[in-house]
Each structure stands twice: as C-alpha cells, then as structure tokens.
Length: 397
Image (tube, rainbow, N blue to C red):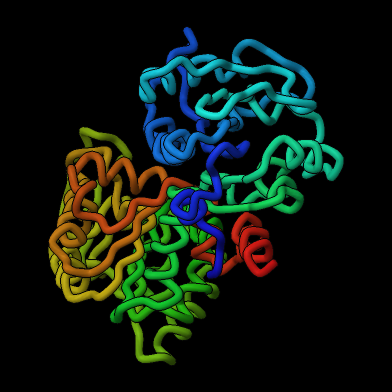
C-alpha cells in the first residue's frame, strides 16, 4: 500500500514552518466528573504531535469524543480534559480552540487542540463544503487515527481529498505496516483466532479469513455453533443454530484448501453462568442437556497452543472462553501465553482481546496491538478502509 508518510515529509524538511492538521483518536473514557479514566489513546497520539513540533510546524490537532449532536455544544462533549492531559504529556500548555472551522490562529512551534470535530455540521456525512474549509486550514494533513479509518467523514476523508498534501501519521502507518505483514504477505502458517459470542457478528470475517488462513481457531459462542455444525451436542450453551449451515461452509472452504477449523475435543462446563459456578471438564461429546460451555478444555488448549507456537503469523480477535471468571479463563490464558512464546509475528485487536492481553501481561510479546476496534474487524473482513483508499489515491497523485 503506497502512502505518503508524515515521518518522511519531516525528514525531507517539508514540514518546517508549515501548518499541519493532525486527525488523532482522542476518544477516551471519562467519568461523571469529566476525568479521563484511561489515557492510552492520548499517549498514542503524542509521537505525531512531537514530530510536527520538532519540525517547527504550526500544529492543529482534533478528534471526536463520544457521540455529540452536530451544532449543539454540551460541556460533556468538550475535549477540555484531553487538552489538559495532552499538555501534561507534552510538557507545555495546549490551548483548546472552539469554533475553528473558518480559521485557526497558531504559529510555528505551537500546538492547539481543536474542539470536538463531531460538533461541526456536516462532519459525519463528509460534507464537501466543510471538507474544503478544513483543507484550507493546513499545508499538510496527517491522518493518525486508525480507530476512525473505517469511516468516511470530513476530518478522516474529505480533508484528505482536498488538502495540499495528505499523509499517514506514525500510528496509522504502523497499523498499515502490521496489517500488510499479517494479511497481505504473511509468513506461513497463518493462524487466525476469531472468538466472540456470535457467529452473525463475525460471519463475514470468518468467510474472508477462511480463503486465506492455514488454521482458523474459533472460540466462545462462535465455537459452540461450529460444534453444532460438527454434530456435537452443546446443552444450553450460547449458540446460533440457524447459522450452522454457514459454519459448515467455512469448515468446507478450509478443508478444500487443506486447512482446518479445529473443533474442541474437550470443554469446561457449568450449570449456570456465574463466577462461582462449579467448573467441570468434559469430553466434547459428553456435554449434558443442562450444561453451558464456558471455556475450551485443557487438551484442546494444549493442542491449539502447540499450533500457535509453530505458526509464522497469528491474527487474534477475541478470547476463547469467559476469561473474566477465574474458573473459565484457562483456555484464553493458554492461548495468550502460546502467542507470547511463539516466534510468529502476531497482531491482536478488539476490546476483549486487549483486556486479555493486559490481564496476562503479554503486551511486550505481541508483535502489534491494534488500536482500532471496528476498523480492525473491517480489515479482517477484507474491506478497503476509506482512509487507506484516499491516502493511497493522494500518494498516487
């Protein structure tokens, strides 16, 4: 994927004294008092901003926060807490600017944060008039918000269309490189883990991956539907019986290429869905009518771990059991540890996956942790993200 990288523009001296507009992803969780409860995204935005400041650019940064109503400002929609945290991280004051569409006063070597971009009328619908106004604010546009790359909005797509130069920031460029490494030119065998409660939400991902991967590990409620497809009983476990046909098609698609969808040999069951429910390990063909499958069993976990350790590339989306409950976390823990110990290049994404990575402390052992939930899933579906599309077009001139 050929894109203009902001790092290259800086290295070539093209950003010096220029007006640089950075679209960051600063959509952080806030408590009722308006305090940031988790600042990963703010910290992740700092390298692009520092790069622009070191180049003596006049730096404008914006992001969305929450789901505000366009044209209607409410205090809870303000990026004020983000401006404060960004100032602490950068070691300088970061002024918050409202009503900025028609002009921003910022000098080279300065940085300002532009108020919640989703307050601007026409942002969500990628309005052309708004996009042209945004593009007129800068000499260089920098897209550094992978979490929004699957949306064509004024600050993610329209501005890139009309800006003098449209580039990818270091965070977005790293996502593009990791995705290419994992999916476009993977080291084989390529193993994907797709887990979650429903096949329906991930069916297109399963279908897309089944044409490319060497092993497709399914987990959670998705695995239960695949167990039904394999003729196994699952008791009162979460599943989607109406999608058994789709699951069979994925299994056949893999088999036709000499690849496989490993069906659990053993499972961990309980009579109720609760943290203190007694856990019992059973063979996959011994599940009783009143059992709920809440994790994969130790034999299955060991087999999958061996497969992951022998992989060339691993793509991970979703825990394989109810890892939030201690009695049903062993499967996900085994998967996480196998990925950590594997020499494979691994890319992981999705909220629950990130929670599992944090729980088992393997952040440094995963090749790349994707910051974009929905965007990451759309990439796995084989879709071309709007941000990638427009940046590639602009790089081609």
